[in-house]
Image (cartoon, rainbow, N blue to C red):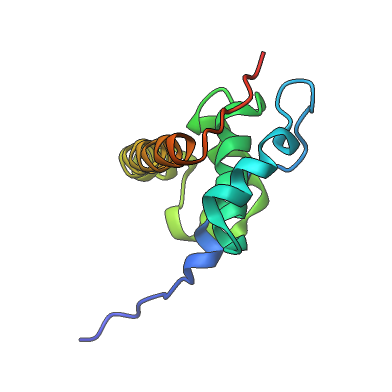
Length: 126
């Protein structure tokens, strides 16, 4: 007997980070010159870094659970895929935390290389 399988598109399962960030807490415009030097014309890389920085520095989310809950309420595909919010948390916790740390480390490594190469300094957030 063949079981029916539901196929989900990756883009339907991506967590969306709110673009509504208080510029007093985090202003991405301070980083644009650095992103240009780091990524060149690769706009998809710049946007990925912007979204990651909004999540990490924007002050809107205290933890991954808050981001997951916001997305779960707004995305019926996530509800269909994971069933309960608790199951969604369990699925995300390991994968997202490990991936976020890896991405952050890779970005820092690349950023440090370019800062040395170009003599640039990252502006400090207060």
